Image (cartoon, rainbow, N blue to C red; front, side, top):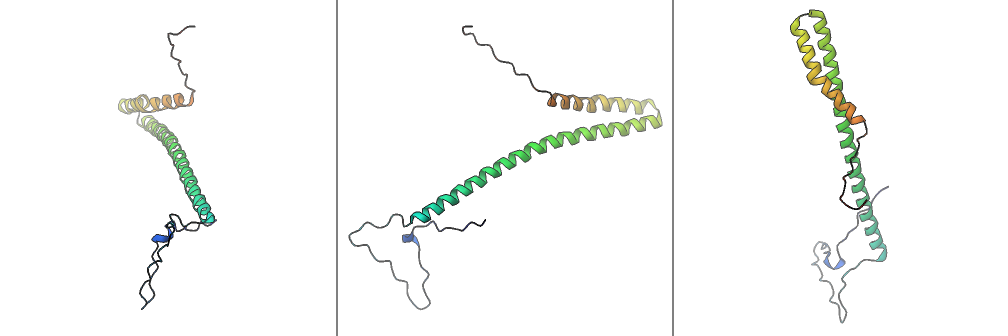
Amino acid sequence: MSVERINVEPVSRQVEQPHYGVPPQPPPEPQGQQPYVHAYTQAQVAQIAAANKQVQHRAALNARVMALLNAVSLIVSARILLLLAVCFGFVLALQAEGSQTKESIAVLIAWSVLTVLPLVILDVLARSPMKTVQPEYGGAR
């Protein structure tokens, strides 16, 4: 589907390009008539309206797509952060198991308590439906 460009300037404002060697001719003066305010036919007006409607439709569609992509990127970034935290928790667990020192176990516990556990709690709370509390008004019951 191709969109044709429409010249939206009134005819009276358009200036013709002069031919080589011929001076431009001024437009004829209207005699006893009002000058044209709009020099569009009904078909041109319909084309302009259709083009404006199509531009507005595309702008609305682009806004909806951008909002959707923004929401998807927020969700995916939170999931990737949780995935990385859990993966590094497993890496720390394997290192703590291999070295079996008190310091490595303390790092594993600190990572689990301070990073992995809060992320898991936030993820679980985000999945559960939120309960809304209705405010009580002092009106008649």
